[in-house]
Length: 262
Image (cartoon, rainbow, N blue to C red; front, top):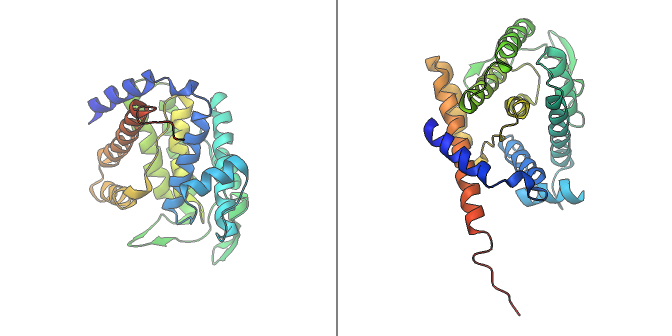
């Protein structure tokens, strides 16, 4: 699987797609579509492209969904800029990013632990339960984040093999989403910071396909149950291989089946 990834990455990079007009922009838009769709956004991929490229809203779709996508796009641009400056991870950096992500869809949440505002990137002050699991007590969140970021920052400038960079990105995603530091936006944020590691190293981004949502959740849960990071790493590897193969096939077919019609 990982040796296939090296080969597919090499084939993908040989296509030199970063020089294709607007390729990166529309790839980012596609990642945003898949990431927001995983969270239940109602916009289609075409809706997302039209919104972000032409600023035209989808008829009959919730305003909140449009705002979610616009904010997600702004975070992508923000992280790209931070990656150019090689900014290391920190709680302040995470909170700044969350504030952009949740700017128009966040809210004040009142809980026994106190009130916190997700639109300002404030860490949660409440216990969180999803499906069959509880996330860490909110009082432990700052220390868990500090330890996680210290470990990632020790490695981020040392790792240089492409597969090892992807594994580091997957590890950050897994740990960050399981700390669940905010009242909302944790999944999107974890996927964004996974891609931040790749931006930092100027590597191709990862897209988690919305049609693979069940496998994605299963991989997260199984990794935790077995305490084996290789499970989630392998899932991310599969997603990246899937993307590379699709792009290579798409490029190979470009123009081959076009006929002028009169």
